[in-house]
Image (cartoon, rainbow, N blue to C red):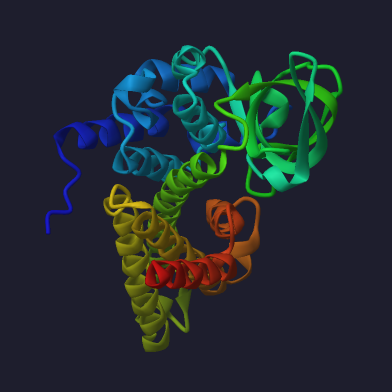
Length: 359
């Protein structure tokens, strides 16, 4: 099987990698995550000019790529640089806009003019008809870069079923409690009290859209995690080659070599799962959902192993703020819990198998 990315996709990887290496070094990252917003708007506009945001969406939506592999390679380079920004919220909210016919707004997002976030847990919000529009009430926590967003795409429960809505920044009744995240960036808790909102698509028809959006977001997170694992593995190997104990490099100790060999094999398993999630995406709902849940389960398990092994093999220095490795490890652990942890996706994989057998 050919695992090459193809010429166009490889050009995207190379250009994005060079850009982040030249414009998002570690000192810049420290400054960005310490800022009030937790990300750089200037960097985001440059990424938009480079075409990175457009790579997340297809031509019909105003982008130029948009396949799961395109999403994967973008998130992979984001993970390699440990870049922070509204990547996940933009992907998820933008996919909702594309699915519900709001290409006009999405074009401005791709151009870097508008910032989006997404809050797609319908169970925590309630929507009712209010005059000619809709009114939303409830709360939702850990909405990525919520305070920075110009619009937030939210899911809410209605009398017709789960539905999708667009909420504008500054809408009456909307409050956002913002806070920094342990792995960098920022999030916020939404509190809505009779907030006016615009219905996206048809009321009660949100479930399949949300499921598909979550699936492509999971592909992105899995590719991001694999790239982070590669960085963590390489940094740990370099440390084992240079750190000496009893007059020799600790990488000479057979027990540590065995641990790194096991980790390398597990990372390759995670990489295969992430590739499989992208490759099986267009093969029907059950196949797609099983592939992304299998990948997310594997990423959660192997990501935890990679973070723990890297920190343990570095010793006490592995926990320090000054060492980049500790930040990569935090991000790995966080990804393991985003959009469902390994227990959730193992249960989901089993349920999907039963659903497939029953059908």
